[in-house]
Image 1: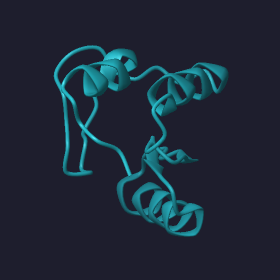
Image 2: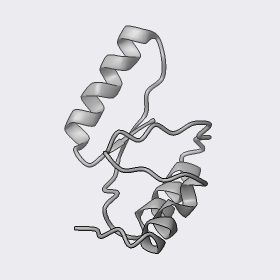
Image 3: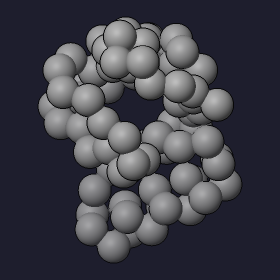
Image 4: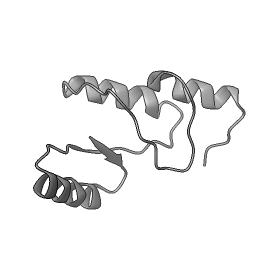
Length: 82
């Protein structure tokens, strides 16, 4: 599963990874900047029936712990969102 804001780039990357590696790569266009985005994404993932067993964050910021708590942890650390 790939998550990012730009649907066009995400779909292209998912298709490329699927073709080159014989995997199923699902594109989930999603903006993770709003404060409740983590929970909204978890809801969307559950709606699609996807089970996440590992998370690779390549956005330049990360926290430790459960994915659903990431937004809550960010608020507690005083991190500012644009």
